[in-house]
Length: 222
Image (cartoon, rainbow, N blue to C red; front, side, top):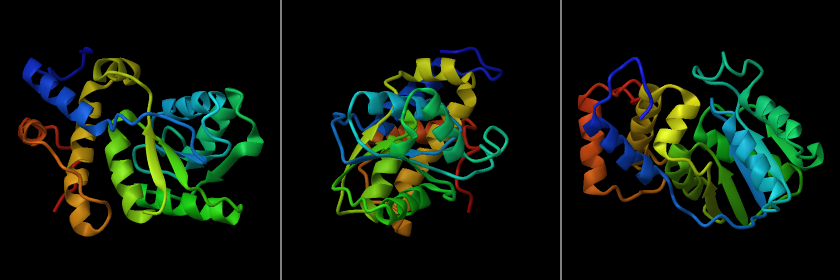
């Protein structure tokens, strides 16, 4: 567990690890018709997408995302724009990249990427979603709701929670984000934003405990 300004207890860390593992879909990554890399504040998503491209897993890649309050300062010209630049630095040909620079949430990531692909004559049967590790399940549930006719495979950097925290340097923020994503996994199906996902009892207990402990800055309010 990484050092952090806030003391995180062993119990809280165990609960965080439970939620981390739940968010990972553990899909077998395999060749797909296209990949969609979801914008966020983690440039590592672009690097992982580049790695998967070089492994021959897809012929076309969409970077999607404008800005959000958590990324505007880090990527002032937009998430997708910066992700494309990183992919080019890592040797991905510009000819295989599409940039979708407008999406401001996961639903728009999927909907706008689909539209960008269709405009370019690409109608995939299989889609590889590349995202942050703790975003896999929510991305999957959203894509299955909004684009049910495609088969969705999720991929993210193969990191443990501890390794991811070391890379980001902010354990509290990562846990807050994971807790917020889990709330959305549970609540968004009721709003029509995503398909239902079974949440094991021990994961719900971990969620409730972390919320009660103050890991709540990324929760939906109201």
